[in-house]
Amino acid sequence: GCGGVSGTVFTVVNKCSETIWPGVLTGSGGASLANGGFALTPGQSAPVNAPAGWSGRFWGRTGCNFDSSGAGSCATGDCAHGLLCESAGGVPPVSLAEFTI
Image (cartoon, rainbow, N blue to C red; front, side, top):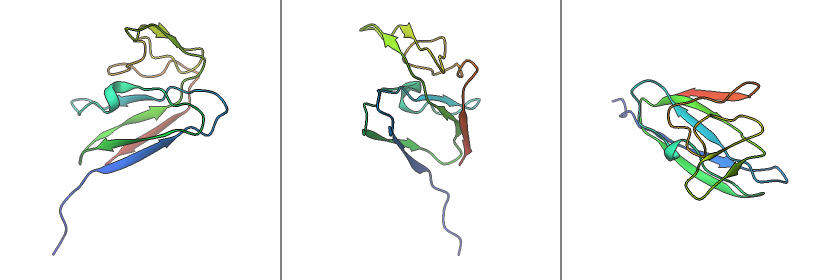
């Protein structure tokens, strides 16, 4: 028989020599992943669990400055919502990776 539908784990890796802040935007009506954004220091990786049926996009942000509440902005890939990009995509120019599980 056929197996059931399952989600996946994206492993986001920072291979840059500076801290990056991946942004995550979930498609309409889907579960938010990683609260929409997080920081990765050089060489650091982080698993991001996506449920079955998830769709959305990831992109890198650089040159970010956030205060203790997560408010702030980025030089590239800014999402206009600070650290957590839950409902906003990256402001161009930005390179995106889009997925549908």
